[in-house]
Length: 330
Figure 1 (cartoon, rainbow, N blue to C red):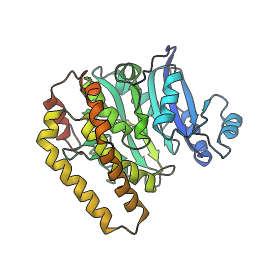
Figure 2: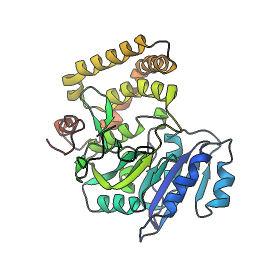
Figure 3: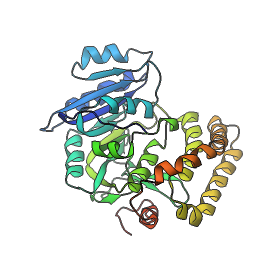
Figure 4: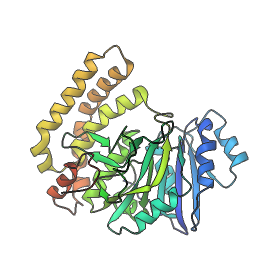
């Protein structure tokens, strides 16, 4: 995979992918302009060939934002990678365009990452836009069944997820990364297009010896699937759950938990068949078939991913056992 290897004269680069999201940008970019942080950082808006007035709006209202216009729709992974290739920050921060950041978000996120030397990435506390006492993600987990998820999802923000500690991974909709992480393991896999690119990145990072730290005081408010979701999400998850598990999980984990992964896929297919009249269900089944067709390519990519692994397989397996517990453990 390509590497992120640009010179780093800045403390941080915040990359905001955008596709026809003009109506979100006032809140998102405005909140970035109100960040209370002493260090210099840049904001890169990577525009996915929008047909609305996103670019002229940003030029007129946010002149300090660096616009990266794409001639194609890179969706999430392609847009992020375009930003990564030109970002100048020592730390790389990703933020969805349909999110709003607390004024101390960036400082808290990077403070947590800087103070945790074993961590290559930091996860935000992501709350719902219209229910700001409810969680969307307190970082991510990954199960023995090959299904990823958000810690604390839909729960009330009642203090159970207020401790900073190591967790499995970060949701890339609001996360920070050391530049050296991308230099060591490569960029996001844009063949995944959208959804699970961060799961893949989390797994590859673990294999390379990186950890993820949760920063509970780095708070984000997110409009759920305002610029995604629907059949695209269903198709992508249907495909990418299969691809990521078969490509990224060490062979002993696949042997030990392969039956659990298969049962989970059969359950997903059965649920989709029960709701076959719904577009999202049909998209999920198409995605699963696409995932099955992608197995030979995914399997052929395993040596390139696992040859550089520096941890024993059971160390990764211990993270898969955590699911969405509020605190880390073995």
